[in-house]
Length: 450
Image 1 (cartoon, one colour):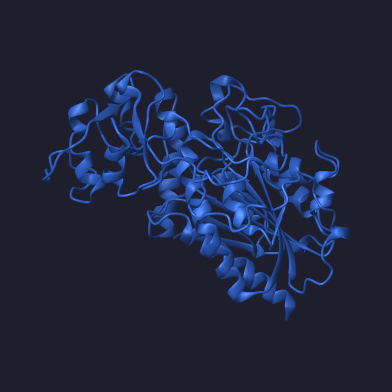
Image 2 (cartoon, one colour; image 1 turned 30 degrees about the vertical axis):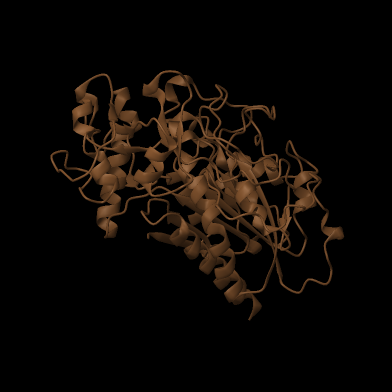
């Protein structure tokens, strides 16, 4: 677990570009489903805990399905860990990174900074199970069942194991030269096919898996773990409090937006659009933010931020490399990170009561020198003129790949001790990252109480 701490955590804004929900049933399925944000004046005056307003910004790209599930599953442990250290009076809201599409309540439920109130009920085919491997033919994927069962290493296509093996196919670039990126990461994957739900449940040892069949073509059939939202209310309250935090796994499953208007992610813009009184949701933010509360913003994502300034746009040729573009300070389209930090701090009369954290991609190397070398190698590969190398990533875990969240790192560093950056790449899921953030928030709140 790599964690970088920055300033005293005064307000934590959670922004998740990750897609996850837990498998527990909501304890209160009859909770108020109104989408109206309760004003601070209406809050329960008898609550004795430290008031903290949490904004989670969750990545809704197709690479975040596993993370959205993992987030929902780990949230209860996150709240327990926080509660063991400090008494908190929470308010919680969730937005997605999508600020370009219009909400249509059909395929787009969370966009443009509007608090999510609709749980995703399904994930698209790009969320089907796959494993990164150096392959240019299906034969190189033949033993991947052995890998999933823990009987062979992922990088050894020659390893054998006992038992029946299912069908895997290799998804690879058009030319073999593009399989490996300049920084050593791979652009090829093995995808698991199936015919029945039982195939997937037996292999992944999880009864929640299904064999998704989006078409009559069996090559499109694959194992997938659906959103764990089947028992969620159709409509959710836009803001949660201590009485209904069990519904968080439903809110955090913002789903996957594959619409053409969602081509680059703007997590930072989404958080500002959600909360600023002069933004596109002028009543939502002031009603959510309590005068005496801390603000905690948390971004969860496996890609870097590409928030543009004003009405700016990014050309299609730069979609995959948008985070490398210059900011408006240097004649480019991106919103400067320093500007984002200033605007987040301006949301509170006391800017030291804002905490900003991010769960995003970074090197998993053991030393600071190795980390910097891997960051530099990633940035060089991403900027390579050969477009197939623009899919380069910096880390890989059981949940998938992740790009280096350089802008998110810079944002958390702008908050000093009030910021924390945690690596999303961890084979054990999001639990360790959320533990680190809970500890950071608790430590900051306790330090101000002394």
